[in-house]
Length: 419
Image (cartoon, rainbow, N blue to C red; front, side):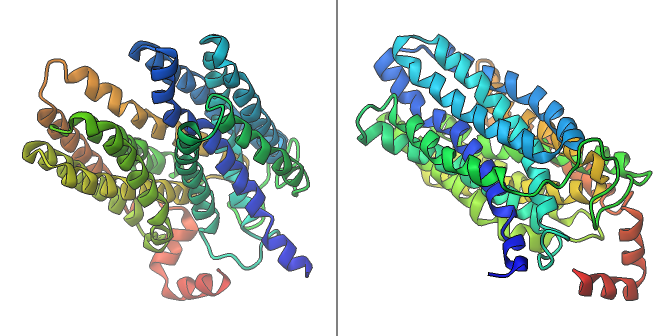
């Protein structure tokens, strides 16, 4: 096997770390029914366990990205995988009370934040020269997003199956995850570091410093799209099963189908997402936000028509929006960020994206006074505002090289050949 072939595979274990941390974080979702039935946990207790996860996640996103820019991607990623394993060990203690679950969920949030900020940047850097000489431009963003989404999908699916059919359902899902993470740690430890401690320069092929318009483009183009990354996903698998009328005792099975469809379409759409991306405008983000708008419109029609089938169609569309926006957002970030700020800007993007996780909570709270159809109409209006912001600023504040590519076809041809 050649050295070049070896190098081309460096990105994969780094991306697997994203998948395994996402798996460990999301398998808890499929165990909620088990905890309600076997341990008698109240809705308030379950909601609090979901909330403590976010309390750990958001600071870790912001801190982990900055820290990985300074000391390197590898130590932060290794710590994230190790902490994910420790979180699962803690949650095995659910048989003795709720405290281990709260502690485990808090650690899982920290692990997820660290991995998404550091390992996402690491995958991007390992997908370019000198570590990978053959990847197309944008491969790093697609690879990181695809494996992250795969982990978010596999976690609840595998966890739910083990909780339903395997012995020791309070132990087995966590034990399997730990068993898979142990060999991964040894593999990840052997990967090359793309950032040296204390470096401030750029990695090969990246901008040495952010261009003057980078922060403006982030605020006016990326930030309006970011919350819809997870607002679309959570609406697809959490809001749809809750608001479609007439499901009765079939609501649990319907919710399981909605999770599988939403996250499955998120994974399947991502190869297309990179093809939609262009350096000339924000087409990928516009497409993703438009898809989110169409998904929300489908939810509204499904509510008014009391149609479970149309609700699942809406879940598929919203899952597609989730995948399109995640890849599109990461591609924008990786073009805008200087090498020494890639982790930090990635952390900012995911922090804004996780604001969308509040969508089911906001819908449930508002539904006490407002009909769900009107709530969905309000979400449609907010999505339209985001689309307007992105559309108006789509061609503004592009990195200088990309502006030259857009203006000079000869430069565009040369850049295409080098990609």
